Image (cartoon, rainbow, N blue to C red):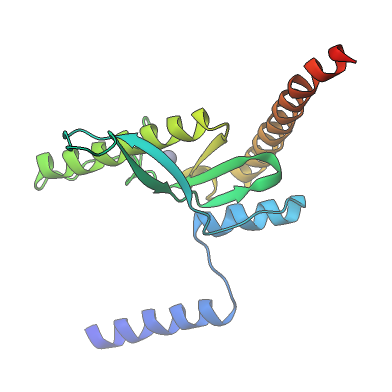
Amino acid sequence: MNRDRLTRARRSWNMSRIRGKDTTPEKAVRTLLHRMGYRFRLNVKIPIQLRTQEKRKGKPPFVTKYVRPDIVLPKYKTAIFVHGCFWHRHRGCKNCTTPTHRRDWWLKKLEGNATRDQLYQRELRKLGWKVVVIWECQAASRIPIQKLETRIKAALNKALQTLRLSTVHHRAPQREMN
Ligand SMILES: [Zn+2]
């Protein structure tokens, strides 16, 4: 009986693969961006410098880490993270649960994830990146995805404005000199 169930699950998994139906939230966001006409890149590694905790003789107090956003829009200098509500602690979300078995271990792990997310996002912003966090529950069904579309459009328009402004600021002194 058990084997039968497995086989059935496996078969439907295979079918979903054949149809190319990948329902992960990340895929949903990629599909949405594509439909909206945005160009994006995947597997981008952005180096950040983090201050090290331990003292290292003769070595700089910084280490290089690489942040891998789920989606990067180079033109907008925008990094998008599609976060699982459980693993990344979506506060106030019904999926932000803590397992009761080995609770302390889980808490430490999950809170650690959330702290690292905050740190990485702060560092990216320091480097002039715009950061958009999309939670899996926001990419899950049709109605949230419409809201998401509006939100993404607004965020990217704002990112573009900021980039244009910083370009104008760079040019401004030159114009004054002429
Ligand atoms: Zn959530």
